[in-house]
Length: 217
Image 1 (cartoon, rainbow, N blue to C red):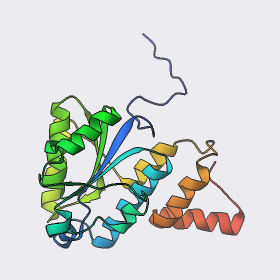
Image 2 (spheres, rainbow, N blue to C red; image 1 turned 90 degrees about the vertical axis):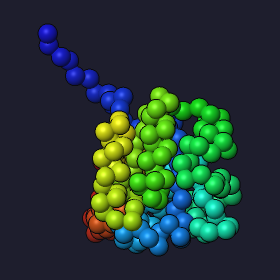
Image 3 (cartoon, rainbow, N blue to C red; image 1 turned 120 degrees about the vertical axis):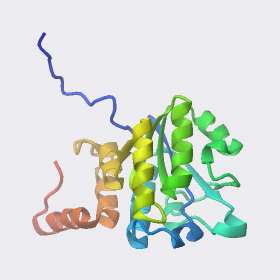
Image 4 (cartoon, rainbow, N blue to C red; image 1 turned 180 degrees about the vertical axis):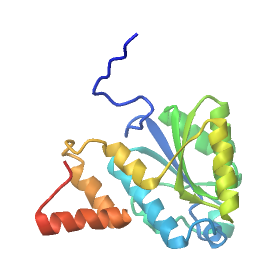
């Protein structure tokens, strides 16, 4: 039997309205012991994810652990993208075991969960495996996560993927939300985020626009 292709997006791709982003424990105390990714890249990637989610109006939960007593505030690169949004502070290492977080997950009511945060092997594995167990579809932004060693991060990613989680990167997240440069209402926002946080890709966008007046699409 022949297969007919159509110019439509696959159901596995994320859209701004089909998921909840949960950003977990991007805090000083957690970052001090993170060695799978350097602090500059970690902060940059977290900022890219946060600004992408805010720009596309993705339902987003920001959660910390022991903010006042031990771990410190969430990175300002993230909170700046969500001015005035309340942090959900926890005692549990597993975000999915916190009643206030789960209440918010249920209020939003979306079956897809996208996770990023510190540490991969504890604070990301916990909610990822718990959400999958309850029938949610889980995505993990691998380069917006970090752990005490590359081994710890990589084994955590392996464990989640084997359980059904889908890995992606921060820049991939931004571009998947945009997906078509003909979407002019979000074009400048997307390229603006890329220019600020998108590393060499962002430099390329800046160069092309400045030197040749070029643009994506």
